Length: 181
Image (tube, rainbow, N blue to C red; front, side, top):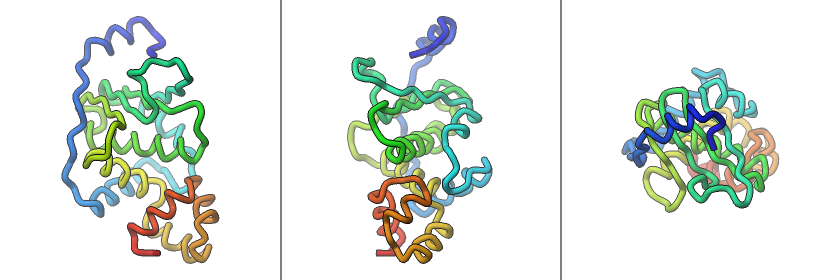
């Protein structure tokens, strides 16, 4: 997974802990996500990959036969500005975008921007995963902008999804969580 022997050696010496839920409410996590996006100059519809690079992260696209330790939708955080997000090479851009934003949520919320080395993997639905999903939804679809888009497109989920480059399912969940259904 690592491209340089020195980096691999360094990464192998770090113990990655499990992420721990923040216990913050859904609206608080939404606020954190929206503020983080604003502070990084990320706007709805922007490409997320350049932001990950600016933060020091790497996207690792997994193909069949890759290590079982590197499963799709996982995050390895080694230090501030040193993390890897695993993404399947066989999924679509909308799913990848949400997956990347979800893993970014773990990086921000659960590793404190890399200050706490963690390994976050999607094995089950638990509070840590919910928080990362809440972060991803608000990061990609900030509330005020999302409400305007829903009004502009008369709640047509495919049209709203195109605005944010996410799946219609992600839009449906966001609409429900904001009481727009």
